[in-house]
Image 1 (cartoon, rainbow, N blue to C red):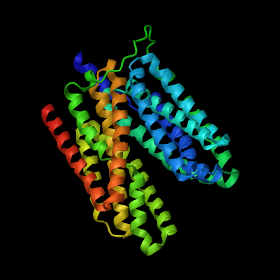
Image 2 (image 1 turned 120 degrees about the vertical axis):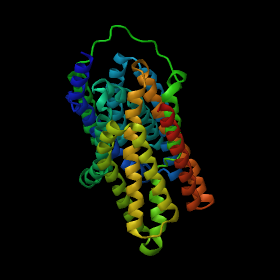
Image 3 (image 1 turned 180 degrees about the vertical axis):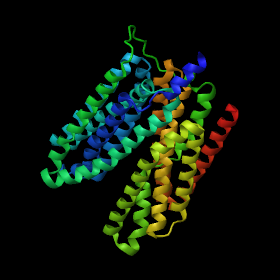
Image 4 (image 1 turned 90 degrees about the vertical axis):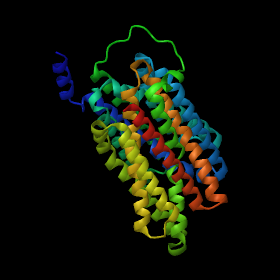
Length: 404
């Protein structure tokens, strides 16, 4: 009987309406919030007349609030009933608050709305990831999270392109306001996913608790240590764009170098999009730690390229492609690992802790590597990041050996 049940489970389709709805929500949400994100710099500095320092302050505070939202959202998502409301509310609030930036008349107003939108975006992340684990069989976690990451990365490509088209047609302010449409559609897709999944009704609400120690015990704790080391070396892609611009400027001029660097960044996003779903399939077949380690190794090689790179476009393109492959593999496998290893009653907290580690690690990587880049040298900055990738590989190998 047990063997028959296992066979039936293995044959269950993984791309259900619930999984499709969550993937669609990720795509539409990214399209929606990438429009104001792509236009934020121009809007704050040119339209509102604020200095670049104010833009940096707004973005820094917003990222901090997003990290806090992810941590709180993890505790909220431990309750199966609450996680559904948090997911729907988070998508809706992010869409509305981001779109309202287009009607502001001061940088303070824009900053407050941006911060609130990013806090709501952070809240929804653990709930969405926990919901995805609810609607897919365990044997297909990798493919499901790979599909979601593919849709998310695809939205990150379409969003900026849509922003360019809307600005040409209706201007910056109206373009930001219109971003509410795909954002609200994303909330509708989440509602559809929840209804299609036919999840059981929750009769009793769980007490809100922040649980870190239980998540960090045993196997998941060892795996999370490797993830943390990787995230501390996972620098924002803006540093890669800066490095490419600096290398290309002497031979192409600053303006052309900037355009070429942005084009190379599209290579990064395309590589991440193309590899995310295969990475999920590999995760189901070989295990999420193996795929995470492959992503870390790709990043390590990419950072070596940026550390010693010449201004050759082909070489720089290789560096961006390796980084894109790295993020496509690592993010997909991280989510699959947490879904597989976390007990159901701690799944929300586990995803919240992972999201918090990702946010804080990215901030730490960008701050330290940015300082080294500015005050020492670019090769030293990327050498520092290579070191963290090496540490992550060691820790992931240790976690895998302990498991065996």
